[in-house]
Structure formats: structure tokens, C-alpha cells
Length: 95
Image 1 (spheres, rainbow, N blue to C red):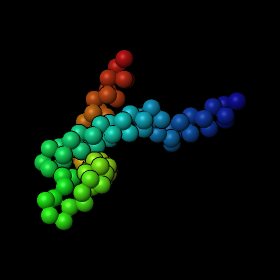
Image 2 (image 1 turned 90 degrees about the horizontal axis):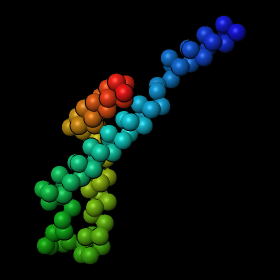
Image 3 (image 1 turned 90 degrees about the vertical axis):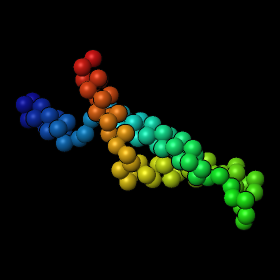
Image 4 (image 1 turned 180 degrees about the horizontal axis):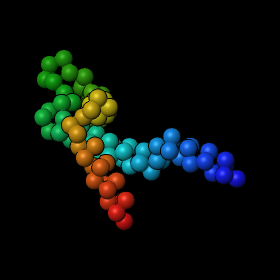
């Protein structure tokens, strides 16, 4: 019985907490949404006057901006996701 308990304890230590992983993904999604809005506010994704893609470009530009924001977060982002994650994790552990 003790051997099984030690094995389970070892597995728990080796595996990251699933709650932390979900919390980190949520924080990264929030950072990506924030970055997408910032990119939109500086004009990224707006159609050009010349050689633009017309209505098709206008309709799909938000997807491009969102994908670029997600890639920025994957590359490290601006640190917002990590700050949110740590704050939420601390709050969850204290509750």
C-alpha cells in the first residue's frame, strides 16, 4: 500500500497542476485579446487605399490581427499573461 501511495505522490509532483494550465491559457487568451485591440487601434488590419483586397480583406482582417496577437503571446508577449496568471494563482491559493 505504501508503495502505491509513493507512486501516486511521485506522479503528482511530476505532472503540472491542470488548474494552473487552464489558468495560464485563460491569461494568455486575455493578453491576446488585449494585444489584438491595441493592434487594431494603431491601424493594423485596415484596408489600404491602393491595391487593397476590398470587402473580403475588411471581413477577414480581424482574424489576421487576432492570429498575429496570439503569435505575439506565444513569443512572450508583453508580460501581461504572466502577471495575470501569477495574480490569479495567488488569489486561488489564498481562497
